[in-house]
Amino acid sequence: MPELISNNHFNLPKTPKIKSLSTVIANPIESDRQIILFPNGFNSRNLAQFKQTFSIRNVAHICDFRDSSWSTSKTEGAQLLVFDRLGVGLLSIDDPQQFRNLKNHTQKNHALRIVRPELQMQLAVSPDSESPPCDEWNASLENFPPNQTPLTSSQRAVTNSRLLKGYEDNQKHSWAMQACGITQIRWTGKGVKIAILDTGLDFNHMDWCSRQITHRSFIDNSTHDFHGHGTQCAGLAAGFSNDPYVPRFSAAPMADLHIAKVLNPDGSGPDSAILAGIDWALGQGCQLLSLSVGIQMSDAKPDPVYEHVARRCLKSGMLFMAAAGNDSQRPGLIRPVCRPASSPSVFAVGAVDRFLRLANFTNGSFLNTKAQIDAVAPGVDVFTTSIGAKHYGRFSGTSMAAPLCAGLAALLVQDDPDCLGGLLWQRLASLAKRLPLFSTDVGMGLVSLPSIRSKGMS
Image (cartoon, rainbow, N blue to C red; front, side, top):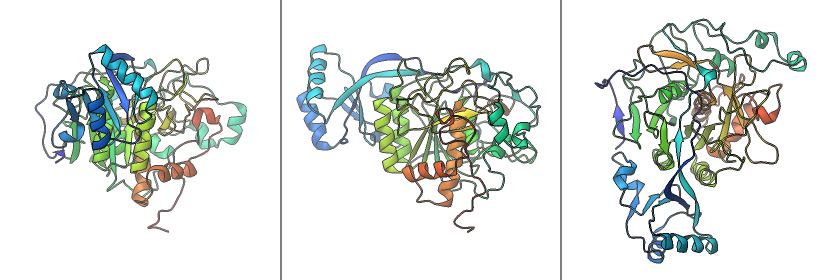
């Protein structure tokens, strides 16, 4: 059974103050374990053949941990760890000759591929996102980052006066909700499941302590967020405050949150934990998954592992959304969309500010590559939940834009429960607000709900 949090507080140590965080940028530290793909999926026949051919004796399955948390320490003795729903395996072979035989075999047999070594991810703090947590929701927005790319004369000509002034938080809605057109929408995301894969959640927070939240850790024995990033992301996707003086700041405040802790308190986490979290989210029947991790590579090639996984997700009716990355310093330096957002089957989300200008840190699409931005969402000084004594703060990064986009997509699923996977992607594209910016920077445009009517209201 899923683990639930309801009407209780944990006796946990006080969480330290942290700086605002950007999208997760990965430090590509390789392990000695290899990720392998079974393109046609795992089944008893091909698994038995695999074990016999390469003398693999100890095999563990993620699905064996349905009722308990999993971490790498629990399957250390396994030569092969199987992520059953994903068609992915993690291989640990110490014998060099045995590994060479396996690698030679995969070059001839397309039913099995050794892709690459397992990588370790690491959160990074961006100097562009140092917005301190705030006690009052309506703290001044005058000190917006001054280094945003200015609007050109042609952009100003096609942008209305409201946009030139910029969106600002008011008593009912944060600026991000206004920019995405959520202020007049009756949907709340009720009944829709959103998976947030990150550093966990602050269950002592006044907004979360009384909510029923399905959660699972794939790193340690606690899903509590000692870092802060996961709490920020969860707030933008499905946060809700009982305080009438706090505005609506999340896209889907009544959605069912599924928290998968896949990163350590220091912000690091291996591929295996992330893959386990995705596998679990599929098993939970989540329709949306938000992942704010990434690796900036020297080339812009998609990661074959996450492309394979994202296709499985789409086929199963779950839209995989990921942050595009914060490695750029616009206008002088533009870096390509990071992995896994660079995979064609992953919905890559960039960030814009309250003037709907592109955030100077957000990565972009590169011509003649598959690394493309699909859409943008608010991601500069956005208001959301925070850990520590101050319950709210303003944070920046494409890692803020991705969960907000997932929450908005949940509203569309609530309106039409059959609009899943690829169909949901298409509907987001059809509703996106076109911006006077290059599509290589903003994709289809700003994710929004521009005065649309639901099926139940039509």
